[in-house]
Image 1 (cartoon, rainbow, N blue to C red):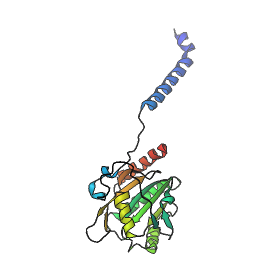
Image 2 (cartoon, helix red, strand yellow):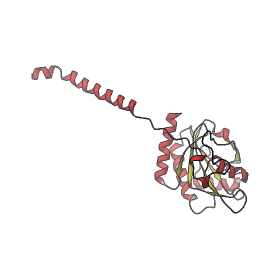
Image 3 (cartoon, rainbow, N blue to C red):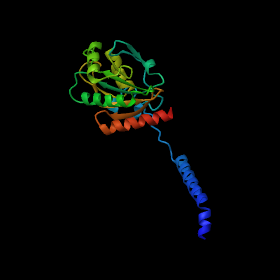
Amino acid sequence: MLRFFSKYKFFGIVLLLLSAIIITVMYQALSPKKVLPVYQPNDVAIELVDTTIQYVRKYHTIAPFSLTNQNGETITEATYEDKIYVADFFFTTCQTICPIMTDHMAKIQEAIKNDEEILLLSHTVTPEIDTVAQLKRYAKRKGVIDAKWNLVTGDKKQIYELARKSYLAAKDAPYNEYDLIHTENFVLVDPQKRIRGFYDGTNPEAIDQLLEDISVLKREK
């Protein structure tokens, strides 16, 4: 009996290894892959969505835009063509949540700095204050890598409409026309310009989740 087991020991080990591999492959094949939702205006808190699109349930994408970055360059939707990107809204003189959000965006920048598929986009909600020169100073102070992260300013109405009608990430401010109350939201956008996630830009755990979800989107791409 001992001689029998000794004789076939090698084959037994090989059989066990093959069985383990087959079980692992079957488990992976049967386990559903994570897929991120595609967000529509109808899915988002009503105060973040312009009244003209609150009913929309499908086909929502980020509208075309033309803004100016910290280097005085024109940034359009073509800049982000076929890219995954993270967008947010801020202003350089903000002393509350913006510094935390910017630090967390810098953390994302560090994680994706060598990945050509991922970019970042931060819109000022006070373009009358945040000129190109002001954005450049802020960018230098915060360690912005120009090739990865655009801080943009421009027409106030356009920024308002992008925030309320495209990214669904700001509240209407009842003070002056086109004023915004930006939120802490980071918005994950896929290469088809669809919203795939909202994340609390002040929460470190949400940033970790965002980075994981970027990996999910890359596998989908």
